[in-house]
Figure 1 (cartoon, rainbow, N blue to C red):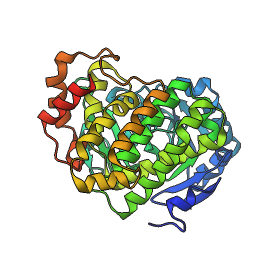
Figure 2: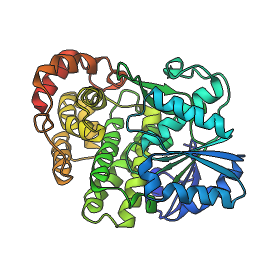
Figure 3: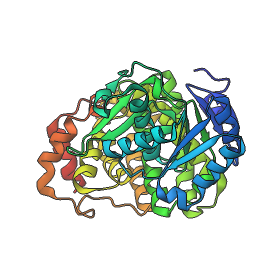
Length: 384
């Protein structure tokens, strides 16, 4: 790992500025440096990619003001939608071209950062999103990207993948390229205080799922495990704290850093079957991703723990796999999230379709225990 301190050591700091696979800046008030950082990466005309909620919260205006105070130009694209598809990416590309942007800033949740990365692919390399489905398909350099999360969830700020949906099939396309990685990620916990409680709950459980899944995937390695374990420790200790006291800035910071570390682990080790099972639920029933993946995760943990090596992987972050599964269910309950598909209005008759689609998800191939369509059917049935 290209850093002076381990993830566990960084977890103890209240602020830092380190080089990982990107420059990671953490600390309350660190957003105040965005203008200076924009200049450092060579930007003159920035497109701030965000959503209307972030604009209403005042974060977009603050970022634009700081960029303009540094002597640069800034334009706001605020039409990002949850689970962005190719349509919104195309709209963002048009806005970037109109602004003659030479710098992109993804401000908000994972959807904002995914949209910014998707825009970067097409703006610099041409074509359409489908052309970049897979890994390493961009042939030309991309614009510098600054990622500024306002939620502690996806960890997209630390990943080189853009997850963009096909508007017809609703299939999520994972478009990855090292050139798409943000140059700098700014983690300022003050920006996360404005999250509504349900957003805090859903994004938080998503981050927990990332830490759990990356700890056992087939691609796990020394680097990913260091980040997975540090992420889980931060998230497990602070999720309930931030739900009970949303203005607890230390807990907010720990969640934000935990999400970023879990995102870094994904970059090195990918995800597993819980995410494969969650995506069809979002596509067919519009269940929020964090809710979907959090509901399916305990079932996946119990399925995977049949294999001793994977069980030991879970024991590295909890006393046992069953203790972990029970802990995850308790977090769902505390967050006020549903714990059955019946409660969420899903249709049991769709199990065959859901299982077929889940088995074809890319992340299923990284699950530590080989998982087939029949296994997904059993898990969905249990989740009802």
